[in-house]
Length: 216
Image (cartoon, rainbow, N blue to C red; front, side):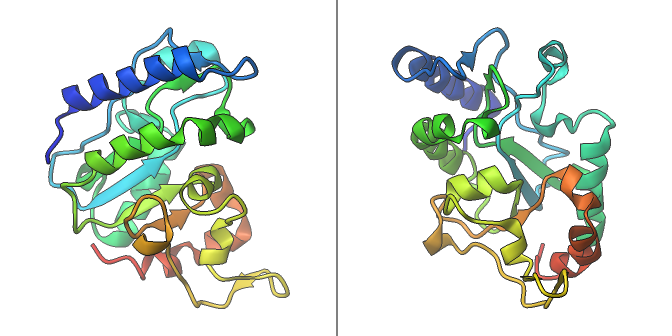
């Protein structure tokens, strides 16, 4: 069932408001001073889904500048990173559909309080599954370890899928991805590190090689 952006925002707003009333936490409250963040939908010719965790940034004053997921409507280091992924796949950022698992803000970046995210996961996950249902044959990339852990196992590491060898500090090249039957999204997806981590030698050296297992 196709879901338009207006319906998606309305559903997400209802989830946020219900959680705020029934399941908020003093140590990291849901932040309701700003509205739901919209998905980034390129030109509509979707060939890749990028899945982030949530839009919360530490600088509260900067949050009002975020309108679309991952701020992909603006030139910044994260957009440059996504463009690097796209180039490696032979597509452009106009072919990207980007959305977050949690589409609203928290008081502080919630990766610091994972218990909150686990407590709020189920309704947001169900909405996400409906949101991407129509994109059945499009590969999905997740950004960052917290969203990977929320969808798989609390101890999951991106580097494990990139076949990190602790003895050499490099990859053995036996790459893998999260298969639908083993994750909560019920879709295959490819875990990627957050943009700052791509500066690490292992991820930077392995980046192009890992991209080759993704078919668009």
